[in-house]
Image 1 (tube, protein in one colour):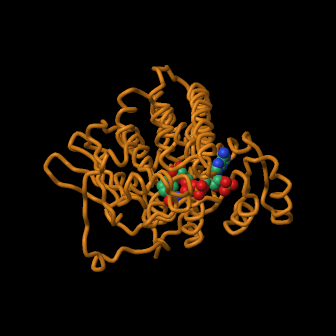
Image 2: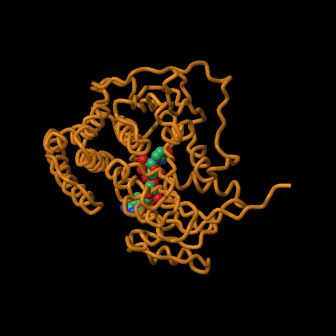
Length: 397
Ligand SMILES: NC(=O)c1ccc[n+]([C@@H]2O[C@H](COP(=O)([O-])OP(=O)(O)OC[C@H]3O[C@@H](n4cnc5c(N)ncnc54)[C@H](OP(=O)(O)O)[C@@H]3O)[C@@H](O)[C@H]2O)c1
């Protein structure tokens, strides 16, 4: 006879996004296991309301206050409590839960993640940008408050599953795999003319627009190198990236005796999400399954750093210090947004980050407020670059 256990209380930050919707799918596949507390979104009130009702959430929070009335009308009579604004988002992250899934995109997720960590609530982190920009502070806060952090990113979740946390001295290196994105075989000239629609059409994964563009520039892998360094405490020279276009091996840990432990699975975020939601148990997942007999080939190759310079930038930023990682992330967020809104070209995204990184000086960042203020300064500089590029493009056409 199975022992009935109490339901796990889950809060989902960013429930309307790709990660949030995959998490909802996993939760709804085993509703007896979970009890959804708060769900949040930025502006998409309609989908937030629909998700709150579907998941039986107690509360729905929308960051954009102008969407409060719409959310209210959509949830009228549902019994779901509602709130709006940045403060309400922080409160959502502080409300009691067994696990908070951090699925917001960008640095906007940093303060909510810190709030959740300060409550000692287990945080499953998909939202990589806060780790890139504030990794040392996030990890120190988790240590101070005894908070468990669970990685959701498929590569980091793979490493998490095969990393010997009790004997890390036995680990030689970790290898992050990268699909190479949609432009792996494209020339630089072709990439110069890539459209947002082409850039977000990832060959293996279905994801939000920002991370899809990051995958196309390989900035995503750059952010992941920094994320892995902070999450696992492994030095950058022991973090390797290999191109693995099939996205079957999600990442690997190599031990000193030559053993390589890898985690494999389908290209479906519902697997790593189920892994963290059920952790330390395992649950059935509604996601796709890997059929090894259908895979003819697993290939691995070194990335071309000339074609994808973002990777090199990640190692250089780690060597320079936290301020450089903040700058890398902030410039990239501004540039990707400008590309997605057709204000700059695809290669200008990396051009913008490179330009910004060439113009920064060592800056002490000791608090989250320091980081947020430096992030804002860098964004302003990036907007200057973007406006210049945009004017040039308009003049040429
Ligand atoms: N998607 C994946 O497969 C995947 C895999 C690994 C890691 N990740 C990481 O997970 C994070 C989420 O990615 P995603 O692809 O799910 O992104 P997404 O589809 O764009 O969803 C982003 C979510 O964050 C909310 N949001 C955006 N800006 C916000 C703000 N300023 N304040 C509060 N909420 C805000 C959005 O709300 P609205 O809908 O209202 O805008 C939405 O719910 C990213 O950091 C990404 O790198 C994603």
